[in-house]
Image 1 (cartoon, rainbow, N blue to C red):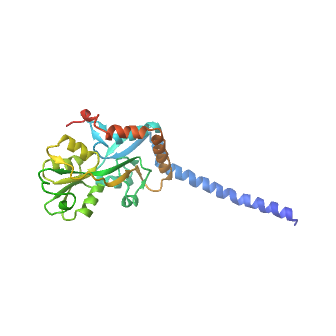
Image 2: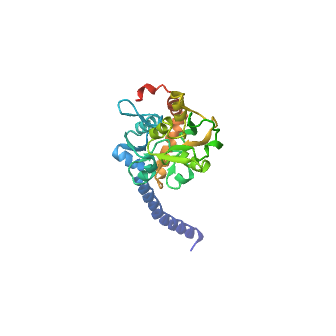
Image 3: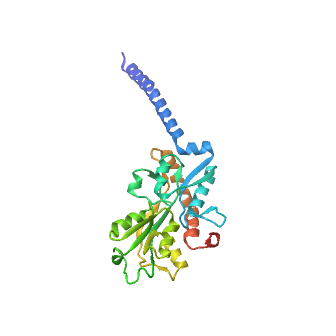
Length: 277
């Protein structure tokens, strides 16, 4: 057999072998795309968002409707996808299991990225950044200096169950009592009532509460504690969802929309009159 004929036959054989493999790859890609939550959202016409109320990320206005930074973000995301948005309020300590169980499509709820959470869910690029603030009851904290004097048996911390500040409290204040609540409003009220000495929570909630109650609570420190990045959380094994959400965050960061909305909700309280006391 002439050398040129051998080369041609080999080339034809390679093409015939490559065709089925290419078809398999296409079938695999198609199957992965169909399984993506993005395709599911497009088919249903609804983006289901898991969230939990937390000032000013998400809260109820005087009419009982949801407002806040997360509500704006999720609503804009759904608008850009050409679908409706449905919010699924969920207890914070059960929100990741609910996502995995398929109760909603994505968590958009001011969730900080942590290695422990990342073992269970995938996180998008950050769309917001925050830090933890401290708010203490003035009378219950008399004579105490932050942080050493708060690591004592006569000090009680209040914290929202499942929130990252709870782990910080356990690690840095092991001698104190830690009381956990499902609702952030309960956490705040415990300190305002003097039933708890101090709380740690994402800013600007501590700063807003101190501003409203200067005779009752104060900030024992102005040091930035545990800076964090907030991201959307999605189920593992869905690269299309990560790709779409990451690029949406990129676009809305570049055009300034995310910054403008964040400044509105976190830069002051122009929305205060909308919220029930």
